[in-house]
Image (cartoon, rainbow, N blue to C red; front, side):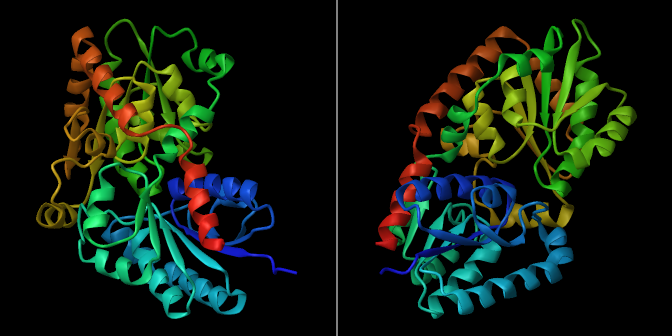
Length: 376
Protein backbone atom coordinates (compact mmCIF):
# COMPACT_ATOMS: atom_id res chain seq x y z
CA UNK A 1 0.00 0.00 0.00
CA UNK A 2 1.29 3.46 -0.91
CA UNK A 3 2.15 5.68 2.05
CA UNK A 4 0.07 8.79 2.49
CA UNK A 5 1.78 11.67 0.70
CA UNK A 6 2.55 14.87 2.56
CA UNK A 7 3.20 18.47 1.58
CA UNK A 8 4.93 21.00 3.81
CA UNK A 9 3.52 24.49 3.13
CA UNK A 10 5.28 27.70 4.19
CA UNK A 11 3.12 30.83 4.00
CA UNK A 12 3.98 33.68 6.34
CA UNK A 13 1.69 36.50 5.20
CA UNK A 14 -2.10 36.99 5.22
CA UNK A 15 -2.43 36.99 1.43
CA UNK A 16 -0.12 33.97 1.12
CA UNK A 17 -2.13 32.13 3.76
CA UNK A 18 -5.32 32.77 1.77
CA UNK A 19 -3.85 31.81 -1.62
CA UNK A 20 -2.17 28.71 -0.19
CA UNK A 21 -5.42 27.56 1.43
CA UNK A 22 -7.22 27.80 -1.89
CA UNK A 23 -4.47 25.79 -3.59
CA UNK A 24 -4.62 23.19 -0.80
CA UNK A 25 -8.39 22.77 -1.19
CA UNK A 26 -7.93 22.22 -4.92
CA UNK A 27 -5.12 19.75 -4.25
CA UNK A 28 -7.39 17.85 -1.87
CA UNK A 29 -9.97 17.59 -4.65
CA UNK A 30 -7.31 16.00 -6.83
CA UNK A 31 -5.68 13.94 -4.07
CA UNK A 32 -7.99 13.50 -1.10
CA UNK A 33 -5.34 11.64 0.90
CA UNK A 34 -2.68 14.35 0.85
CA UNK A 35 -1.51 15.42 4.30
CA UNK A 36 -0.52 19.06 4.78
CA UNK A 37 1.58 20.59 7.53
CA UNK A 38 3.63 23.73 7.87
CA UNK A 39 3.53 27.39 8.82
CA UNK A 40 0.56 29.52 7.85
CA UNK A 41 -2.53 31.06 9.37
CA UNK A 42 -6.24 30.66 9.93
CA UNK A 43 -7.09 30.02 6.27
CA UNK A 44 -4.67 27.11 5.94
CA UNK A 45 -5.85 25.74 9.28
CA UNK A 46 -9.45 25.86 8.05
CA UNK A 47 -8.37 24.04 4.87
CA UNK A 48 -7.06 21.16 6.99
CA UNK A 49 -3.37 21.93 7.35
CA UNK A 50 -1.57 21.08 10.58
CA UNK A 51 -0.25 24.54 11.50
CA UNK A 52 3.06 24.26 13.34
CA UNK A 53 3.36 28.04 13.71
CA UNK A 54 1.09 30.94 12.77
CA UNK A 55 3.27 33.53 11.07
CA UNK A 56 0.49 34.99 8.95
CA UNK A 57 -1.64 36.56 11.68
CA UNK A 58 0.90 39.28 12.41
CA UNK A 59 3.20 39.30 9.40
CA UNK A 60 6.08 41.78 9.34
CA UNK A 61 7.73 43.62 6.50
CA UNK A 62 10.42 46.30 6.35
CA UNK A 63 13.84 46.55 7.98
CA UNK A 64 12.93 47.58 11.53
CA UNK A 65 9.77 45.45 11.99
CA UNK A 66 11.72 42.41 10.78
CA UNK A 67 14.62 43.14 13.14
CA UNK A 68 12.22 43.31 16.09
CA UNK A 69 10.63 40.01 15.04
CA UNK A 70 13.92 38.15 14.45
CA UNK A 71 13.80 35.97 17.60
CA UNK A 72 10.29 34.76 16.75
CA UNK A 73 11.24 34.16 13.11
CA UNK A 74 14.31 32.16 14.13
CA UNK A 75 12.23 29.95 16.41
CA UNK A 76 9.73 29.36 13.63
CA UNK A 77 12.47 28.55 11.13
CA UNK A 78 13.93 25.98 13.51
CA UNK A 79 10.49 24.36 13.87
CA UNK A 80 10.39 24.07 10.08
CA UNK A 81 13.82 22.42 9.98
CA UNK A 82 12.83 19.98 12.72
CA UNK A 83 9.69 19.05 10.79
CA UNK A 84 11.61 18.56 7.54
CA UNK A 85 13.94 16.18 9.39
CA UNK A 86 11.35 14.24 11.40
CA UNK A 87 8.31 14.27 9.10
CA UNK A 88 10.16 14.04 5.75
CA UNK A 89 7.45 15.56 3.52
CA UNK A 90 7.25 14.55 -0.14
CA UNK A 91 7.28 18.18 -1.25
CA UNK A 92 7.97 21.65 0.14
CA UNK A 93 5.51 24.23 -1.21
CA UNK A 94 6.65 27.80 -0.62
CA UNK A 95 4.14 30.62 -0.93
CA UNK A 96 5.52 34.17 -1.24
CA UNK A 97 7.37 35.30 1.98
CA UNK A 98 10.78 35.49 0.24
CA UNK A 99 13.18 36.36 3.06
CA UNK A 100 12.14 33.35 5.13
CA UNK A 101 11.36 30.96 2.31
CA UNK A 102 14.54 31.36 0.29
CA UNK A 103 16.48 29.97 3.26
CA UNK A 104 13.93 27.22 3.73
CA UNK A 105 14.26 26.25 0.05
CA UNK A 106 18.01 25.82 0.52
CA UNK A 107 17.48 23.70 3.64
CA UNK A 108 14.98 21.42 1.87
CA UNK A 109 17.23 21.13 -1.20
CA UNK A 110 20.13 19.97 0.99
CA UNK A 111 17.80 17.35 2.51
CA UNK A 112 16.74 16.03 -0.88
CA UNK A 113 13.17 17.35 -0.59
CA UNK A 114 11.84 18.82 -3.87
CA UNK A 115 10.70 22.44 -3.73
CA UNK A 116 7.95 24.22 -5.65
CA UNK A 117 7.48 27.98 -5.14
CA UNK A 118 4.03 29.48 -5.66
CA UNK A 119 4.26 33.30 -5.94
CA UNK A 120 8.09 33.49 -5.95
CA UNK A 121 10.24 36.51 -5.00
CA UNK A 122 9.87 39.63 -7.14
CA UNK A 123 13.35 39.33 -8.62
CA UNK A 124 12.27 41.67 -11.42
CA UNK A 125 11.94 44.45 -8.83
CA UNK A 126 14.99 44.03 -6.62
CA UNK A 127 17.52 41.49 -5.28
CA UNK A 128 17.95 40.05 -8.76
CA UNK A 129 20.67 37.79 -7.37
CA UNK A 130 17.99 35.68 -5.68
CA UNK A 131 17.18 34.15 -9.04
CA UNK A 132 20.45 32.17 -8.86
CA UNK A 133 19.47 30.61 -5.53
CA UNK A 134 16.01 29.82 -6.90
CA UNK A 135 17.46 28.17 -10.01
CA UNK A 136 19.68 26.00 -7.78
CA UNK A 137 17.16 24.95 -5.12
CA UNK A 138 13.65 25.13 -6.64
CA UNK A 139 12.25 22.59 -9.10
CA UNK A 140 9.58 24.94 -10.45
CA UNK A 141 8.02 28.32 -9.78
CA UNK A 142 4.32 29.00 -10.28
CA UNK A 143 3.68 32.58 -11.37
CA UNK A 144 0.63 34.78 -10.85
CA UNK A 145 1.64 37.89 -12.81
CA UNK A 146 1.79 37.66 -16.62
CA UNK A 147 5.04 39.58 -17.15
CA UNK A 148 7.00 37.38 -14.72
CA UNK A 149 7.24 34.39 -17.07
CA UNK A 150 9.71 36.09 -19.42
CA UNK A 151 11.96 37.10 -16.50
CA UNK A 152 12.21 33.62 -15.00
CA UNK A 153 12.54 31.80 -18.33
CA UNK A 154 15.40 34.05 -19.37
CA UNK A 155 17.07 33.26 -16.04
CA UNK A 156 16.79 29.52 -16.72
CA UNK A 157 14.23 28.81 -13.99
CA UNK A 158 11.48 26.25 -14.83
CA UNK A 159 8.19 28.09 -14.47
CA UNK A 160 4.49 28.19 -15.35
CA UNK A 161 2.12 31.13 -15.38
CA UNK A 162 -1.04 29.86 -13.67
CA UNK A 163 -3.00 33.14 -13.49
CA UNK A 164 -3.99 35.30 -10.55
CA UNK A 165 -5.67 33.70 -7.51
CA UNK A 166 -7.19 37.12 -6.86
CA UNK A 167 -9.51 36.45 -9.80
CA UNK A 168 -10.67 33.21 -8.15
CA UNK A 169 -11.23 34.95 -4.83
CA UNK A 170 -13.23 37.73 -6.45
CA UNK A 171 -15.46 35.43 -8.48
CA UNK A 172 -16.17 33.12 -5.56
CA UNK A 173 -17.14 35.98 -3.26
CA UNK A 174 -20.88 36.44 -3.25
CA UNK A 175 -21.89 40.08 -3.11
CA UNK A 176 -24.85 39.76 -0.79
CA UNK A 177 -27.41 42.50 -1.32
CA UNK A 178 -28.16 42.62 2.41
CA UNK A 179 -24.51 43.29 3.32
CA UNK A 180 -24.11 45.91 0.60
CA UNK A 181 -27.30 47.65 1.71
CA UNK A 182 -26.16 47.64 5.34
CA UNK A 183 -22.74 49.01 4.46
CA UNK A 184 -24.19 51.79 2.36
CA UNK A 185 -26.78 52.61 5.03
CA UNK A 186 -28.63 54.86 2.57
CA UNK A 187 -25.56 57.12 2.26
CA UNK A 188 -25.33 58.93 -1.10
CA UNK A 189 -21.68 57.88 -1.47
CA UNK A 190 -19.34 55.43 0.27
CA UNK A 191 -15.58 55.78 0.67
CA UNK A 192 -13.66 52.55 1.33
CA UNK A 193 -10.35 52.63 3.18
CA UNK A 194 -7.93 49.68 2.93
CA UNK A 195 -4.91 50.64 5.06
CA UNK A 196 -3.22 47.22 4.90
CA UNK A 197 -3.35 43.73 6.35
CA UNK A 198 -0.07 44.02 8.29
CA UNK A 199 -0.39 45.88 11.57
CA UNK A 200 2.65 48.14 11.02
CA UNK A 201 1.46 49.12 7.52
CA UNK A 202 -2.03 49.79 8.84
CA UNK A 203 -0.53 51.87 11.64
CA UNK A 204 1.36 54.09 9.18
CA UNK A 205 -1.53 54.63 6.75
CA UNK A 206 -4.68 54.67 8.89
CA UNK A 207 -4.29 58.24 10.12
CA UNK A 208 -3.49 59.84 6.70
CA UNK A 209 -6.32 57.85 5.10
CA UNK A 210 -8.76 59.14 7.70
CA UNK A 211 -7.42 62.70 7.37
CA UNK A 212 -7.93 62.50 3.61
CA UNK A 213 -11.43 61.13 4.25
CA UNK A 214 -12.18 64.05 6.56
CA UNK A 215 -11.29 66.54 3.81
CA UNK A 216 -13.30 64.59 1.24
CA UNK A 217 -16.43 64.10 3.34
CA UNK A 218 -16.61 67.72 4.47
CA UNK A 219 -18.56 68.59 1.31
CA UNK A 220 -22.01 67.60 0.16
CA UNK A 221 -23.58 65.19 -0.45
CA UNK A 222 -22.11 63.36 2.56
CA UNK A 223 -19.98 60.24 2.31
CA UNK A 224 -20.01 57.18 4.56
CA UNK A 225 -16.48 56.06 5.46
CA UNK A 226 -15.77 52.33 5.86
CA UNK A 227 -12.43 50.95 7.09
CA UNK A 228 -11.42 47.38 6.32
CA UNK A 229 -9.59 45.69 9.19
CA UNK A 230 -9.66 43.04 11.93
CA UNK A 231 -11.63 43.33 15.17
CA UNK A 232 -8.36 43.87 17.03
CA UNK A 233 -8.01 47.23 15.23
CA UNK A 234 -11.36 48.62 16.41
CA UNK A 235 -10.09 50.82 19.25
CA UNK A 236 -7.22 52.10 17.08
CA UNK A 237 -9.62 52.99 14.25
CA UNK A 238 -12.02 54.73 16.64
CA UNK A 239 -9.26 56.84 18.19
CA UNK A 240 -7.70 57.72 14.83
CA UNK A 241 -11.09 58.69 13.37
CA UNK A 242 -11.88 60.93 16.34
CA UNK A 243 -8.45 62.55 16.05
CA UNK A 244 -8.91 63.13 12.31
CA UNK A 245 -12.38 64.57 12.85
CA UNK A 246 -14.26 62.09 10.71
CA UNK A 247 -16.92 59.48 11.43
CA UNK A 248 -15.79 56.06 10.25
CA UNK A 249 -16.99 52.50 10.73
CA UNK A 250 -14.74 49.44 10.91
CA UNK A 251 -15.82 46.48 8.76
CA UNK A 252 -14.28 43.23 9.98
CA UNK A 253 -15.80 41.06 7.27
CA UNK A 254 -14.40 40.56 3.80
CA UNK A 255 -12.74 43.60 2.24
CA UNK A 256 -14.58 42.63 -0.94
CA UNK A 257 -17.86 43.56 0.76
CA UNK A 258 -16.68 47.17 0.95
CA UNK A 259 -15.47 47.08 -2.65
CA UNK A 260 -18.93 46.11 -3.84
CA UNK A 261 -20.55 48.84 -1.75
CA UNK A 262 -18.16 51.75 -2.24
CA UNK A 263 -18.00 54.53 -4.80
CA UNK A 264 -14.27 55.29 -4.36
CA UNK A 265 -11.39 54.11 -2.20
CA UNK A 266 -7.90 54.51 -0.78
CA UNK A 267 -5.59 51.51 -0.52
CA UNK A 268 -2.17 50.44 0.64
CA UNK A 269 -0.01 49.14 -2.17
CA UNK A 270 -0.36 45.37 -2.42
CA UNK A 271 -2.66 42.58 -3.54
CA UNK A 272 -5.68 44.67 -2.56
CA UNK A 273 -5.01 46.90 -5.58
CA UNK A 274 -5.70 43.95 -7.89
CA UNK A 275 -8.95 43.22 -6.05
CA UNK A 276 -9.94 46.85 -6.47
CA UNK A 277 -9.13 46.59 -10.16
CA UNK A 278 -11.63 43.74 -10.41
CA UNK A 279 -14.19 45.90 -8.60
CA UNK A 280 -13.67 48.62 -11.20
CA UNK A 281 -14.14 51.48 -8.73
CA UNK A 282 -11.87 54.57 -8.77
CA UNK A 283 -9.19 54.61 -6.07
CA UNK A 284 -5.76 55.91 -5.12
CA UNK A 285 -2.74 54.13 -3.63
CA UNK A 286 -0.34 55.07 -0.85
CA UNK A 287 2.55 53.52 1.02
CA UNK A 288 4.69 55.01 3.80
CA UNK A 289 8.16 53.85 4.78
CA UNK A 290 10.91 55.09 7.06
CA UNK A 291 13.50 57.47 5.66
CA UNK A 292 16.30 54.82 5.55
CA UNK A 293 14.05 52.32 3.77
CA UNK A 294 12.92 54.97 1.29
CA UNK A 295 16.52 55.97 0.54
CA UNK A 296 17.56 52.34 0.09
CA UNK A 297 14.56 51.69 -2.11
CA UNK A 298 15.47 54.56 -4.43
CA UNK A 299 18.86 52.93 -4.95
CA UNK A 300 17.83 49.27 -5.17
CA UNK A 301 14.37 49.12 -6.71
CA UNK A 302 14.38 49.55 -10.48
CA UNK A 303 10.68 49.85 -11.21
CA UNK A 304 8.63 52.66 -12.67
CA UNK A 305 5.67 51.74 -10.44
CA UNK A 306 5.17 50.21 -7.02
CA UNK A 307 1.62 48.81 -6.95
CA UNK A 308 0.70 45.46 -8.59
CA UNK A 309 -2.21 47.03 -10.47
CA UNK A 310 0.16 49.39 -12.30
CA UNK A 311 2.80 46.71 -12.85
CA UNK A 312 0.22 44.53 -14.58
CA UNK A 313 -1.05 47.49 -16.60
CA UNK A 314 2.55 48.51 -17.41
CA UNK A 315 1.56 52.12 -16.83
CA UNK A 316 0.21 54.21 -13.97
CA UNK A 317 -3.54 53.70 -14.23
CA UNK A 318 -3.94 54.41 -10.50
CA UNK A 319 -2.03 57.26 -8.85
CA UNK A 320 0.63 56.16 -6.36
CA UNK A 321 1.72 58.29 -3.39
CA UNK A 322 4.82 56.57 -2.02
CA UNK A 323 7.20 58.15 0.47
CA UNK A 324 8.08 59.14 4.01
CA UNK A 325 5.69 62.04 4.64
CA UNK A 326 1.95 61.84 5.21
CA UNK A 327 0.07 61.62 1.90
CA UNK A 328 -3.22 62.89 3.38
CA UNK A 329 -3.43 66.16 1.42
CA UNK A 330 -2.40 64.54 -1.87
CA UNK A 331 -4.89 61.72 -1.40
CA UNK A 332 -7.71 64.17 -0.70
CA UNK A 333 -6.82 66.02 -3.89
CA UNK A 334 -6.83 62.79 -5.88
CA UNK A 335 -10.21 61.78 -4.48
CA UNK A 336 -11.57 65.17 -5.53
CA UNK A 337 -10.21 64.63 -9.04
CA UNK A 338 -11.74 61.17 -9.25
CA UNK A 339 -15.18 62.56 -8.51
CA UNK A 340 -15.20 64.09 -11.98
CA UNK A 341 -17.08 61.84 -14.39
CA UNK A 342 -14.38 61.80 -17.09
CA UNK A 343 -11.63 60.88 -14.58
CA UNK A 344 -13.71 58.05 -13.12
CA UNK A 345 -14.59 56.70 -16.58
CA UNK A 346 -10.95 56.84 -17.74
CA UNK A 347 -9.83 54.82 -14.71
CA UNK A 348 -12.69 52.36 -15.13
CA UNK A 349 -11.63 51.64 -18.74
CA UNK A 350 -8.00 51.16 -17.68
CA UNK A 351 -9.00 48.78 -14.88
CA UNK A 352 -10.95 46.73 -17.41
CA UNK A 353 -7.66 46.18 -19.27
CA UNK A 354 -6.02 45.03 -16.03
CA UNK A 355 -8.84 42.56 -15.41
CA UNK A 356 -8.26 41.05 -18.85
CA UNK A 357 -4.51 40.69 -18.25
CA UNK A 358 -5.00 38.86 -14.95
CA UNK A 359 -6.40 35.88 -16.81
CA UNK A 360 -9.42 33.63 -16.37
CA UNK A 361 -10.81 31.98 -13.25
CA UNK A 362 -9.04 28.79 -12.15
CA UNK A 363 -5.56 29.90 -11.03
CA UNK A 364 -5.72 27.90 -7.79
CA UNK A 365 -6.81 24.76 -9.65
CA UNK A 366 -4.04 25.16 -12.22
CA UNK A 367 -1.45 25.64 -9.48
CA UNK A 368 -2.77 22.57 -7.60
CA UNK A 369 -2.47 20.48 -10.79
CA UNK A 370 1.20 21.50 -11.03
CA UNK A 371 1.79 20.45 -7.41
CA UNK A 372 -0.03 17.14 -7.99
CA UNK A 373 2.25 16.45 -10.93
CA UNK A 374 5.29 16.68 -8.64
CA UNK A 375 3.67 14.29 -6.18
CA UNK A 376 3.30 11.86 -9.08
